[in-house]
Image (cartoon, rainbow, N blue to C red; front, side):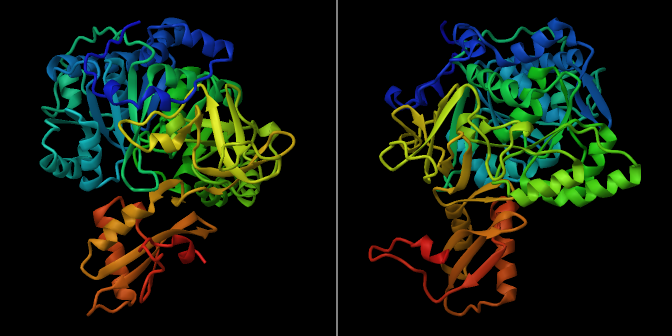
Length: 552
């Protein structure tokens, strides 16, 4: 079927066909998707849920508001009318989304994709410089932004005037159906619509989203995912391993701007007919533990660091309330899961963590095992719908028990937007996520390390060069090198080695100044928690920084 996306910007910037991943549709459900030419992700997940009798079931929950599937559909349709009618957007246009996890963010994302537009979700902590890089790459004409997060986006708009329009939205209860409210907000505009909107007749190969990841260079990469890609992801790990149910209440901390959060906290609950809870305030370990009990949550998503920090609060809550939580599934991903954390959480909650590894480029998890099939130290087995192997530098599979590079192939795969790094990620149809693994005789995969210089700290990916760039912009820093240092609490921390310019003293006061400078320049979670001052950095004869010597 021909594309419905008349704006061909993304289609025209896909990798050459010879660099595409080989997609496999071997499961019956995947074959059905492959043979269905017209697919609109939101129509499949939302409209058909209403048609199936889920209209009155809750979908989006928050402290002040709960929306059923039918109510969610009505609001999504009215927002889509604003996008197409008031803003004049056409299928294939990119829409930047800026917001934390909230009902408002979820509604905006669903409306964008239902209208045949391309969602470009961004982390709420990003600064103007980082937002500007995404705007330059994706070239969105419109941004939908949480009203509390406008400042940095407006700064980025000054530098990149191609972003013509920013429309603010509110997190939850500010929606007013009668058409009153703060003028110019997405809710006020949508409240004036009648809600009559038909999903854009996108093909399965039309683009649903651009998922940005900084990678190891700090330069943003945009992973392209089609409507079929996301629906195919629903038929793999969620169906085969997670097995959520309509009565599940899902909660968790991963941002909707990450595909881990987008899948776990929006797409996969909708696919199962379940509901998802969004808090009014950012999660802390104590707050999440309390809300698990108060909301009756049955599925939780977060990173290992958070589970470790939550464990004592779970024990306290259970003791105070005299009851166990309703939890039945706890998903851990985003960084390596230490066995000590797995055992600590099990002792505190009674739940065996469901571990998994995925990638933005693959959309979600492709290696994982259900709790009853856990093997200590292993992430799990390859998820049905995918195949995986451990290979050497030539791409040849190594013997069981030997450490090598992970290669994956399945129902989803990497397609970068206009990026030469595509050739590094996809080779001979296989995806190379950049991880070192070993595989045992029973098919369990054991994570060893990142195969590159990516720093994964408390579930966040940080590219060393972008931190270096921020440090080098300070007048005191002549040279610097950044690495990830193992840490028992966060998995890794960002550690910087700096050579100072004459006239500056490397003391505790300057450490604090440089840390604050980085926090003000890029997302605050990327700042170096340790800074060491050196007289010189280790370099090769050609001047290349030898990071491995900094790790010794």
